Length: 441
Image (tube, rainbow, N blue to C red; front, top):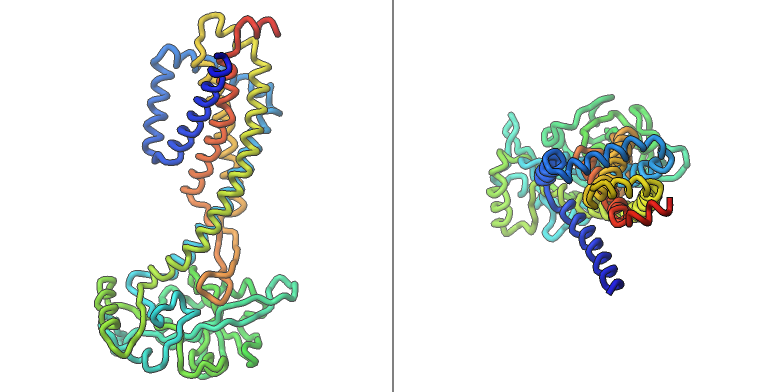
């Protein structure tokens, strides 16, 4: 019978842990805030709540005497939060960079069935027809703001001095490319001249690859090119090299074909008209989407992969932090056995003891979460990174973004670790027989 009771108690604790973590993950912050307010009212108004507050104050007051053991919990949880937040910040930064590359009033047209520019080929006749479709905005001269563009891969030595080469995306564009992307601003030099082997380079590419400063010559596609300008865009375009589309096509033997056509629409609402015009033209076999949707889809795969890796690493580290918290709190309960037994002997019930031990552990976990989040923000927020971008032929430079949402996620992980690490020692403290504790100490 005793074994059955022990098994049922253990099973009940496991269920409490599972239900608590699921609720902690699923419930929105507003619901958690309501629960926190209700808990605070219970501690202020209920007799057992006030008892829990009294025991908690005693435990917290002795923390300086247990600084070493308490530091194990704080440092362990801080490490989990710092690693988790910094890894998730990679995915957020990558997603934000691609997200800023598109808008609802611009569209991209690819060959039918193509998932990205890399796999798309459009002949000259198709690009001409696309540029005349309904819904496209026109400039002051009455020309459609449409840019047939060509994307190719180029290899350049990395700027780290290792001598290794990396892949960079080279984009052949026309004069309307600048009107299509008003966020692209020259910060040094000038624009390339049509018909010449001249390049303007994004700041991200300039930082990642060697020799991309105005006035320098580089070799691409067996030809020598001159870098004449540097631009910034604060999006994926920052990682590209731009040159005249006809010259790029001649250098890489692409003839008159292009990989895509970018257009500016008269308004976001004009996209349906534009797409219907393309679908209704028997000369075309193309797919169109807003650049906002296109770049959002391009970021999904890499962002999901980074998030999964971050969570797996976080879970592995969290398990270690939980065991550290368990060891620390079990040791704390053992050293305070006489104190807890005395409180039980003078009328304190088991619930206040459980709450007190839990609150002490959660306080240490909260401190660890704050420290870990602060470290992640100070060290990694705005940190430059690069990776091979999905749907491109080059690396994408981006900056890690430690957002408030990620910091909140880190705090939730920290408190979840504290909850698991404190529950079992708390229950043990509440069940500790008074006579046994007083006799042992």
